[in-house]
Image 1: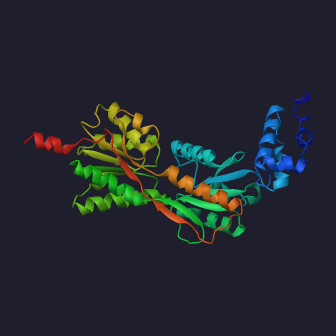
Image 2 (image 1 turned 120 degrees about the horizontal axis):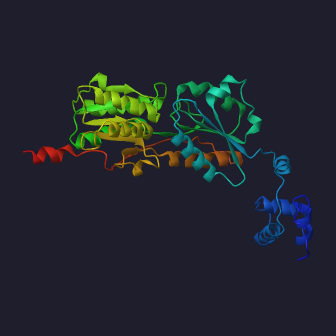
Image 3 (image 1 turned 180 degrees about the vertical axis):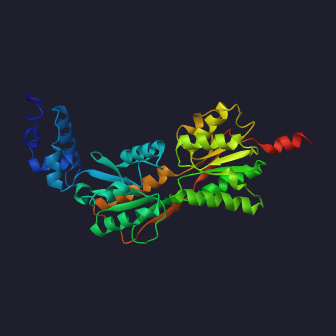
Length: 349
């Protein structure tokens, strides 16, 4: 192979074409993974490109393909309600599943609506991580533009957009039912952000489970949080400072459960000996807490996978006559933060 200057400006598609004895069109197609190029030729071109240190000109590629290679991810609100751990998990999952070369642009629906709309031409597709019905106006705007869009996390009340959501009500129910099976009858609840539908659904699941077992909860033990660790800490302090301490506290996400757990440690309570705690989400850190947190595993990776897969198909012009709308159910993950009251009752007899 002849010597060649590996300067970024010197190595071009024309350089590789000359070395491989093919047309520059063939090189362009091969480097973009086109099936029109024979595998042997594609392998030869890829090998040469690597050897000479070819760096693609993304601006030129965007002009040729008419793509921005940018995906927009919009959360309802980034200032309140969206925990840092959930934000990080969504971004990591989406980036790992997108085709090579794509970048993510993270923003909030609130910001997009405050500005004079967004320029959809900046994106090849958009993922809306919807947490509130307040997103519906933005979703309708995007739908009218015709840009590929998927809505994740929340069930939307329409049948013309691909939608992958979480069974939050079932999650609240199974968490509470597990605690009841463990012999708990006195509960407290630390709720999520009031305007987020996930909190309303999780609360309903909690209340339905109690009603099914004819268990009452003191209204003073139902606290309004905001999905952040600080609110979990403050509200757990209020619960522990009251005269009527529950045996089990259910938190509507793991971040608030983390704050609640720290409040117990700071006030001298042992979990689960003195009080039990259940979270929701099964964030990566939850199994490393002391004690490891019993929680509801939110199928975030599953709905992100479904959403990204469908979005990529839409961007590749693989149209579907059918619209996918699925609700993926969560599951209880049992660890060590819930005391089995049945064993205590049995041993005391």
